Structure formats: structure tokens, C-alpha cells
Length: 342
Image (cartoon, rainbow, N blue to C red; front, side, top):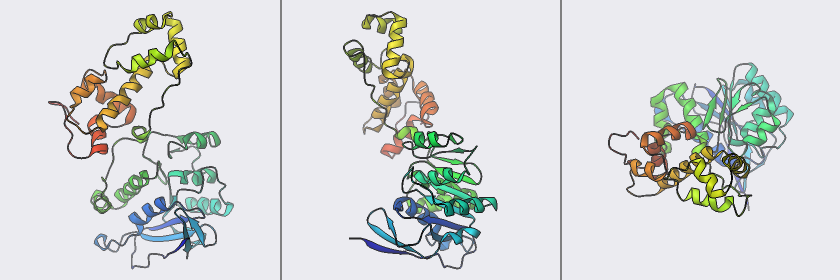
């Protein structure tokens, strides 16, 4: 059983930027909902200069949408001709073809000065249009390798939540679309307006960090079997201890040079890199648990020694701090060590 949804244009007397959101067969409803919630929801408190929202069908309807919905849209690609901001809310598949008519419409819109924004897999449409060539962009970390292989001329960054290249804007995973939309509101109407929208959405007006903090670290598959498998588990169980190469090589029964070569072949990382990633993984697990462990205790348990060292590596690898990471996953007030900043 499907449910028909009629998407009507925003007909209120507004005079702000015109936002056109694409609707296509196979529509990603969550991403579309984000765009509507930020740009299309009536907000009389924002005054008459708020966004004018319209939904634009890429092909004739009715169109299917995720969740068993059938969608009918009044507008079409002609509505892109005077849009100030065009939003591509996902795409039906990261490698699905993009219609020539849509590509030409986007190219024409960009040529006359419009901003174009993609949410999550919507980057596939922007990439196919050629408008991202020579620019930086992002998308969900699962899609980065696939897009990079087909479009090597795009500078893809898997670590950020969104990328602003002026008139080309891209968001990472689905929820990162909220971050990018709020970023656009902040640029168009100021921080106070973005904060107001964020409060209604019950989300932070700005999130620290990037996608890296949400990617589960892969578990190395030991190919040395009897020799390196048990040693890797021994290393993982003693992350709070110093693990010099000389000690590890002796335990493996190899020369230091041979050990380092085989360890890298087994895990894909050098010993130092592997230990750092494991310590970060363990720290993330401890920060995600409810409890009274201070940042001092966690830094010690993970082999960082001090909260300052742990914070340095969090900033460098994850784009956030241990305290901010804990707040994202647990909420509320973060317990820090004496004199330490979250």
C-alpha cells in the first residue's frame, strides 16, 4: 500500500531567496524533509524576507519515494530558471545515471549565478554535471571511494560534515544536511536566525568535528596467523603500556625490520599508526559510556598519558575534542580533569 503525497509550493507572501528542491523517482525522503524543514516550513517570526520554497519534479509524476510513498509535484525543471538556491536531496543511487535535462538545467542555473547544494548521495548529480570539477566536495564516507574513482577531478574530503565552495555546497551523511542548511541560513540571515531554526529543530546550531568520529574503525585481519594474531590481541589488551618495536619484534620472534614489514602487510598500517588508531578507538568507546571516568583516567587507560596529548590527537584525526565527542554521544555536562578544557 502506498500513500500519495501532494507537494505544494510555498505560496505565502515572501520575498526572500528562491529555494528549489529537486524531487525525483526514488526520492530520499529524509533529505527532502531536511530541506523543507529549514527552507520551506512557515516561519512568520523571520519576516517577509524569508526563503520562498518550491519542489521541482525532475521527471513527470507520480514519483516513488522512500518509505512506500507516491509523490506528485506541481513544479518541474523550468522552476530552476530563476532559483537562487537549488538543493539536490540525495539521489536514487550513487551510480545511477543523471538525466541530460537535469544536467543542462543545473549548468544553466550555475552559469547565471545560482547556488547549488547536494545532501548526502546528491553529490552524484553535481559530479555528473561537471560543476564540481576542480573543486572540493564531500559526501557520505561510504560513497567517497566510488565517486572519487569515477570523478578524479573532484577533491573529495571524507572527514568534514559539509563543504562550502562558494556557489557549490555539499553535505556528507544524511544528518549532515542539517548542518549545511543551517550554515546557509547563517550566511544569508545571520547567526541569530540560524540559532532560531536550530532551536526549533532541537539540534545544535553548529556541530564540531567531522565524519571521522562516526566511522567505526575496521578490525585488522591477521594474515600471519599463529605469529601475529595473538601478538595483535596482546597489543590491544595493553594500550596503556609503552610498546617499543624492539619488545614487539622479540615477542614475534622476528628481527625489527622483518616485524615492521610483516605487521604493515597484515594491518595496512605501521606499528605506530596502528597503536594510535587503536588508542583513539578505545578512547571513543570509553567516552561513549555513561560513568564518572574523567579525561585524565581515559587518557591514562588508552596510553595517551595526558588529556592534552589525547586532545591533540582527537583534534588532528577526528576534528573534535574528547569533551565535545562525549557531549555528542551522551549529552549533558562533560566531566573534565582539573584545569582541562573540554
